[in-house]
Image (cartoon, rainbow, N blue to C red; front, side, top):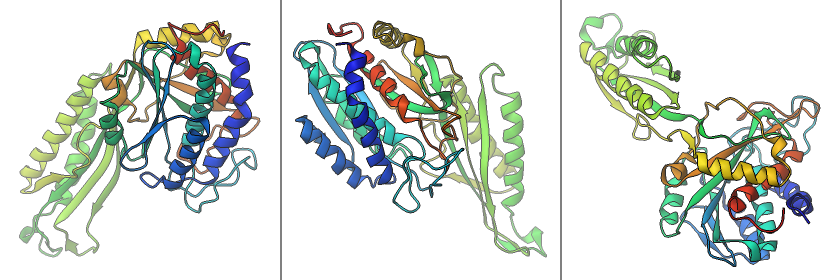
Length: 398
């Protein structure tokens, strides 16, 4: 029996679990029911697990033979979005039963695929070298669970890591696993400009924070165009400007919020330095001071950079499994992922699994109320996870 047959046997289970998670989503840091469902499945499999502070889990499958120890990771949180019952073409197969919350990014699929992969690994335990640490990570959307996961993993002898992200810009039946930068690093911008309030009739008696805020915005735009390496894409997206509540009152504070995305770490650091310099010097020129939100004004998360060796071994195994022809090119994704923390510590890779199917109406943007996936893609994701685990020292099953 080949690996495709073993995964095919789990396809109904994977789809049913994806729908179970999709029906009862929970936002970051509140995935209590989700964790109970995961624990129920792990206990049914007889797999030991560790509860982390918060809602995360690490399940351990120990192979029968010595070898590399590997991490497989799935995130478990949903988004505070009211789901549309329709996708781009018509009614969805499955819709959230929780008002104002839905899996509009695909983490339900990530959990389901990992559970299906675990079932196959258990069948092949006698062929498995080393251990597989299956990480179900809390709060990826807000990064609230990454520190607990990385702290917990310190006691495990991890050699390599792998994760998948479903991707709306790639067709179902295709998967992208290539070396190098795949998702962007993020600079969170949150700048408060502090001035002195006053009446609009006498601006000379106040210190307006609005004027330096406007100058900071235009100077940041100019600096990103003229002072960063034009061969290294660094984006600037300012989404929030707040100041005052009355037309005849000069406020004492203004706020600028946004993000910057990058793939090259050196350019990311340079962009962060520019943001700091421009905010502080411009505010000072107008007699104002600046302060920054504690969870912003830093690089977090870093860019997702795939290790060439892990990619090569995984891809080679996929060809051995007879699914190499499903490998596909796609553009880098400018979204950010805290999975970069794993890759900052261990060699590993992130695969992008296509879920777009125009006939089914799947392919709406992530974090969108019409987001939906083609569930037929999930078995390919499980095969990729298995190819990573067995890449380089695989079982007799091909």
